[in-house]
Amino acid sequence: MIRLKTQEEIELIRESALLVGKTLAEVGKYVKPGVTTAFLDKIGEQFIRDNGATPVFKGYNGFPAALCISVNDVVVHGIPSEDMFIKDGDIVSIDCGTNLNGYIGDSAYTFTCGEVRPEVLRLLKVTKEALYLGLEKCVEGNRVGDIGHAIQTHCEKNGYTVVRELCGHGVGLKLHEDPSVSNFGVKGTGPLLKEGMVIAVEPMINLGSKNVKFSQEDGWTCRTKDGKPSAHFEHDVAIGKHAPDILSSFEPIENIK
Image 1 (spheres, one colour):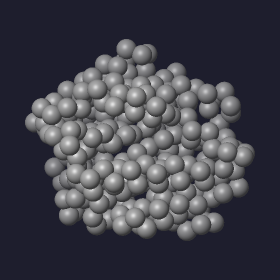
Image 2 (image 1 turned 120 degrees about the vertical axis):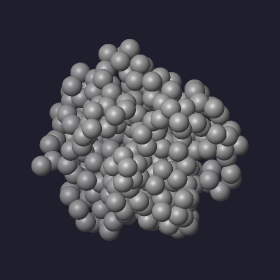
Image 3 (image 1 turned 120 degrees about the horizontal axis):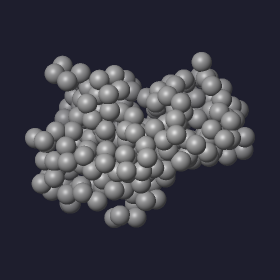
Image 4 (image 1 turned 90 degrees about the vertical axis):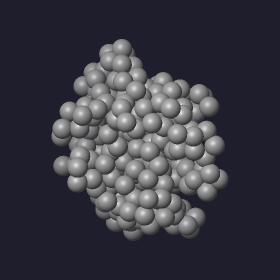
């Protein structure tokens, strides 16, 4: 069931979502060669707790960490590890969720480390562009399929593929609420967008094949089958009557560059 939020609730979600952006910016300062993903996770969890929130990912369906940290060919849900060292040329997707005053914020950003190959930088650029094209469709009267269609069209015309097995979602009192928000789709299909809906839009786009595989060992890590890089960006947005209201922000993240 899709639950519409009041304006007061939307403002509380915004506060949590903006804290996610600040957390990602803090963690992003440490995305450097030789740093472990476990260290990044500790930085993120401490920052979240120091700001009066809790890391909503930790313990969610047994997930063991505060952040999902996915390097290179890991699409999403990478588990931080003391054995995973960031290297020059890596891309590092960091997905973060916070619970502040009972409301959830959820956002992701793919960071670069050192000298990243031009073809991978272009993947990141197009994926971020696709996110904002999807967000443009987050207006009352459109449908969820319009969001996915905008993302899919932009990525595929640029030669990239869209992961099918994972998607965006409603967000607010819970981390995952209705509706599901696929990154592919047909215009004019899916649930009707209404003012008061809050969703997380998060394209996961691959440099090579769209096919992915899930770890049999940890049950979480999702990788591209061909081992090629994948990019991931995510924003929370409230459906507006005439325009989308983007609740999260990349501004503090991009200011660290």
